[in-house]
Image 1 (tube, helix red, strand yellow):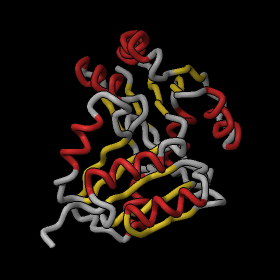
Image 2 (tube, one colour):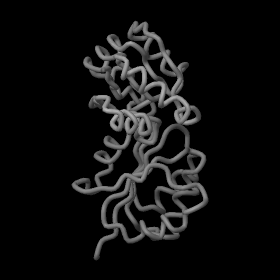
Image 3 (cartoon, rainbow, N blue to C red):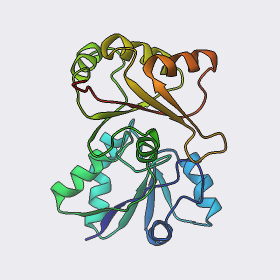
Image 4 (cartoon, one colour):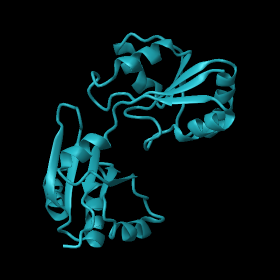
Length: 225
């Protein structure tokens, strides 16, 4: 019986990968990558030469069963996403579930993920928090925002630069403009930046400075004050 490794990869700085992650990638029979071109740069940088297969949201439903079969036949596969930890707003859940159901061992290595440094760096309470990932685009968005308006825990979102100002506007409408917030962009990269303030202050900042890069939005929960 083989095994599935979920291997976190750097979210920006190529040095943010563990020695153990490199060992697993070097020893795997095959590497499953969300985008083989993106992952190819990382693998080339660390001189890792292994067979690489594409495994992404558009083909994972079709390929899961045959991948599980390969592991049942003794192969060790390593799954990586474009950046961060697989299955966190990236492909990985379906394959992980299928492996567990088939009795294939699954091991997730610790490593890079964008929302943890953004949460810690926000200065907002992080003893309890809720990770919301990407908000629904249309269907269910209003209902989700209405529920989050009374959420007492700190909330963490992934947001596209093209939707950041719109998302901040929608949150203001449901949570109020004074709710504390923090926006981190390009974490671990050259132009890393964190902007803190009220939802309204953060929105005004990005109205003046058009959003560029990858964003994590952290919003304070509802308090009794």
